[in-house]
Image 1 (cartoon, one colour):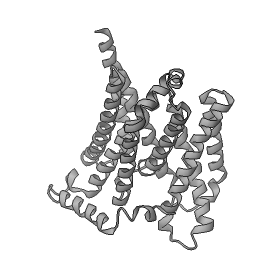
Image 2 (cartoon, one colour; image 1 turned 60 degrees about the horizontal axis):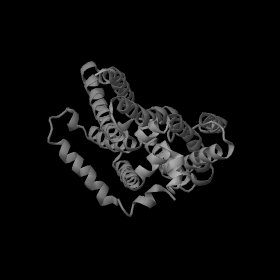
Image 3 (cartoon, rainbow, N blue to C red; image 1 turned 120 degrees about the horizontal axis):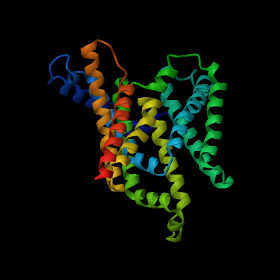
Image 4 (cartoon, one colour; image 1 turned 180 degrees about the horizontal axis):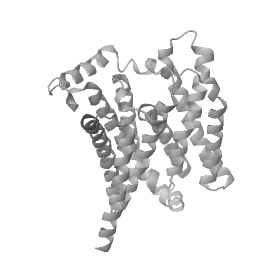
Length: 321
């Protein structure tokens, strides 16, 4: 079922028009040519804020549970998911539907494939006793190999561009896509409200959690599925590069600065939002002043990495004191 059929009952044409109208009204209050006068900047800012809230909420758990390689593998496995979706769309759907509906049909396939890969990694790791990085490496190779096998079939760059998928460009996000991301952000925070403490406790001391009758395996699978949903839905709008960075870099920075898990969690969320908004603004200012268009995703990632290295220095001072 295409996404438009899923979301139209919630976000009909009038609601979408209302969002665009509101953004145009806000933009008209600022001087012509300024950052906030450009509607695409406002859309990108909202989209990045929502993505950063979503990734920041799970980032501390990803780093704290040593699942950084896992999230990276999920992001790269999306290449296989979208390749499979492209083949299905090209062979079975394209004749009856226009090319403009490509992502509406392919995104659910990509999400299902990502969830299946994530659950498969968790299952094989539990059944074989192999190290996590070994199992992830096997699935990583499978997904990239599958995508490479189908690479020559993907010959229509008007519906799918590998460069856009890898690097992304938040400036091209649309109003309906903002609403999809908002639904994902709300779902993520509601999910964590009910399960976060149990998942953190289970990841740090599984034996003690099982002694208290926590469903450790189920909690792990739920987190894997949540992570797969976040990765596969967000990377379409912000790219593989940025989704990986937002899941890992702000959390790593927060671990250098935070004194406990509560501080690390909220610091991760705030850092994620800050680097996204500041990176978007910095990219705009650099373009205005130099005339060279710097990639938004790359600027955000570089800002996040700079903050990480600064946190190493600050963290040493805190330890020394």
